[in-house]
Image 1: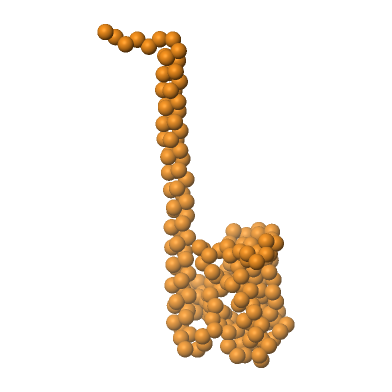
Image 2 (image 1 turned 120 degrees about the vertical axis):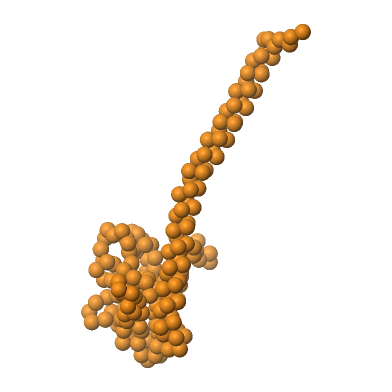
Length: 197
């Protein structure tokens, strides 16, 4: 005895089988799409993590070189006047280093391309320190910046808060948000140092 399906039952069975086939196919396509999206994202996160660890080791080495000199230091990213003013650029910073605040001067410690520690020393007064803020057109990384001037050359700085802490929103005001509130804190510390001189 053979079971024969005919008429409306055959139509319903065909629709159910087609529905199951489509669901399985969409699931397989979704899983493959997620894998193709996850692999590059994972690779980018890994590169970001490696870059962050490299920056942290540079900061530790610089801090070791000034051990005991001051407790008032900040990890910063540096941009020269030439790079900062350039409209189109691939990288918006020249170097990273630490900004040391002492009673009468500010020192930017960084490594040169030969891995030697260099210092840019600013004997500060109120005219040399300027708040730049965020460049909304994005040519300087949509970050807050301040500048210090020495010998007619402007040097630009922004806080290095790490790749995972890049966005920090001010929830007190929906209209006011900052991509980098740490830069404002450094600027305020410099202002206190200038005022106390």
